[in-house]
Image 1 (cartoon, rainbow, N blue to C red):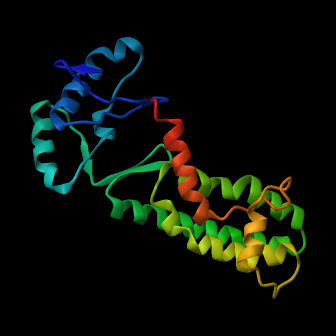
Image 2 (image 1 turned 180 degrees about the vertical axis):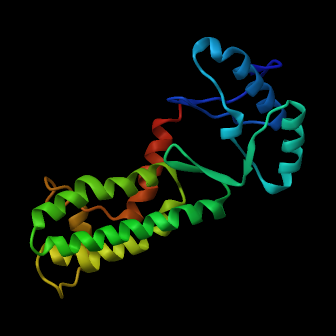
Amino acid sequence: IRALHRTITAPFYADDLTLAGDATTCAEAFQTVNQYGPSQGYFASAPKSWVVCAEAHERRAMAIMEDATITIQYTRGTRYVGGFVGSPAMEDDWIAPQVRKWTEGVRTLAKVARRFPHTAYAGLVWSLQAEWQYLSRVSPRAAAHFGPIETALREEFIPALFNRRNLTITDGDRTLYVNSVKGGGLGIRDPCSEAPLLNDASLSATSDL
């Protein structure tokens, strides 16, 4: 989108539009979307939209939006397309409850694994761990939060999978279990060490965009 001859980053995901740039340019771009969007079947809703900015910049952003007659919401950070945009502290607060949920999910599957190991294994490898892998791809801060998940995997799920309650998983064992089944492992990834690799892979894959 070009607003007064300045280019602004404006990616679409389905019907979600993101404008990234200076507040003045974003306001002009939003007006452009309002002007030409309806003819393309796109109707932007300012009251349902958010300006994400540092607190020090919010007063200026509000003044610019008011001058452009754009009634919009303001925040330090918000969820976006499965990830988070904004304040690192708010992102940490957003990640923490998800990690607690996944940790409890691992513990629940550990209980299931004692009687139904195949079911529990499939639930973990093909479903649950895919959720924190996605977060790893969209958030470089994720790895620092994943310790409780790895602890639950090592101390509860893997011993339950082998039906050995007091089994101690050594670092060597854990390295082996990370490997794929074809590679002699279990495909149970270490979320802490894998997260930075997944994030780097996503950054590389989307660098042209």
